[in-house]
Length: 198
Image 1: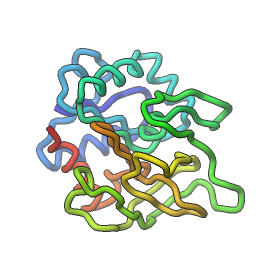
Image 2 (image 1 turned 180 degrees about the vertical axis):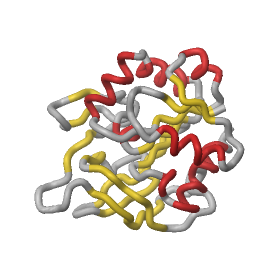
Image 3 (image 1 turned 135 degrees about the horizontal axis):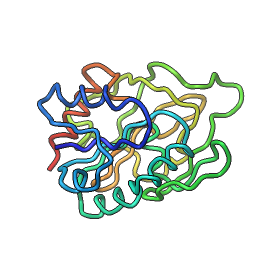
């Protein structure tokens, strides 16, 4: 069973439906016991970094995430769920993240349309295991901030005024800045690959 973490951010139902297409049971929950008993954890999200972190902390989900990742459980962050894995964000003032990955979240530079909305090409750097069976393709993005690191743990890159991390991977941690649940067959393939991880 895949635990979809409910911390007050939207987009949970669409991710749940996408997983169900492949027969994966996905439960929307903030219950510690259910999360601990799940085989996989997914942290989707839309919205602001600070509010997202507050939602995690209010439910104690920040510590649960760290504990379950330490056990080796497959973890997938999506959009805001990817950004919160990093050290901090400048959105709405400085806010600390989960610090599970190195890097900071910053706003796109002046001169480009914000938010970055729409389909953009991604360059896949690491195919295994999340992008297994996929070639470079277009994915759907909706964001004004991005992770300012291309030094380590990068599995895919996108360009919007400058190259930025479209997806990251470290051990059992996987995350995408784009929304795979909105990306047609290629995005659904990513969710299928994640759900099949042991």
